[in-house]
Image 1 (cartoon, rainbow over the protein chains, first blue to last red):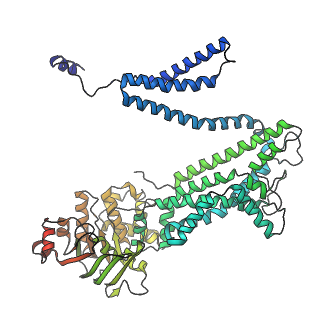
Image 2: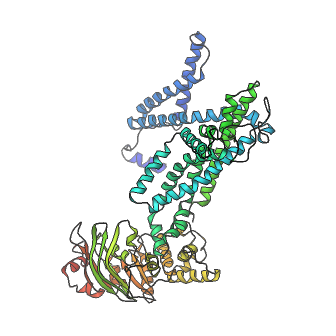
Length: 366
Length: 259
């Protein structure tokens, strides 16, 4: 410091031409709080004067944030110049957009937790079915089992089909057939889930000549129709990411193509493929419409995929809400608890996918 | 161990495009042959035809013949996999397998082919190959670490170790030093000099000093213009090519007046 002072004293007062005005570090936060305070005060006065009924916190936050965007722009414009002012404005807008996008999610999780926890925490929820329950009590064990069985079988069917199609498309497919497969996979991605349910229902009612057929395996088939395109697309993208040099390195060592795919391409992309499969499971595990059609609903336990109706969690939530009995509240509680269970299962799946992805991803560490 | 390569009237195509035209040459066993020439003249393309890696690219094919000790690589019924087990290749960019450790990378040729190997044999092979690639001392204490943890030059030598672990007769090198610093380049050039005793080596290089340092014979490729096929202009002893070339284009190229 002393050195710069002495040089500044001896030489003429040199100003660094690279400096510019700068707002203090925490000014955005302070401006935001101030804007909320100002709009809050405005609404408070409105309330006191009787122009508005009560104090609105949503209005305060909303208009306060709008005021903040304007205030930070003007403030920064006068202190820091137009470039930084634009930067501050866009930063504010981007942050607001992020918060707005997250709000529904938090609201959803919060509401589900608050409404679902009472029934979720009753010991019978995971030990009993709804058989012979008309009021309070009972549980969703039959629905949890049904969801796990049907989604599990759907995964067992669609992962081999989807993964092998993806391998065909990236490693072997050339020309018209590959283009046709890609096109139809894209079309399949857009199939409404109810159509998949109707497909499975039509297929099995024709096959078994039973116009009222309901069974769990049919639900698994319907979910498979929805799942395959997602698995194909995600696996294909992951396989395409494997550098061609690795394939060539394996070929140059005299490794046949199928062993190259099996031992070089797949292990290299395994983490991404597993993540894609988990995402596709999360996508179908919450499907209601197709399962309602082909698997139906029931209040009893059913471990047999090929016989009788089978309950699943989304359908459980729907039926508890749609067919409320005399004791309305306990039905609503169970519906929320079922929704909470579903969210938790999906969350666990995603966490599992992250762990697996970390274990399998190529090691780069030194 | 090492074998003689004879190329007769080889034309190399990418679909309809003729990339390299009418190449004929003979590569003697236990020699280092350098291929030089401007970018895009078909050196690498030609090199990749010597172990049938060319046809990995969709639509690529070859006419003419490549004989290794009299066996035509492009004869009917030839299995490219068997060809590649005899003719190894080292690429421009080091490409160790990211999912494997250093030791497994060396053994890749064995492991990927599902062959079983006793632990002691495997260890011996790792040591021998890494010794051959001049890398043993640097990595012997961390064979279980991932191959990508090595430096670029070490990775390239790991790839060479991987190539010699399958005990090929011929080793092709496609600009093996272009991504490396001078010290690593020197290490690999020394290695090529040592490996000459056991293998037939063909190396593509953009570095003419490197060609003159390591090779016994040199081939000069050139193209007449973009879209025209590449041709082998001159093929002779390295000393002749660099001191007294027979063709004007070669002299212009090696003296730096062109390309």
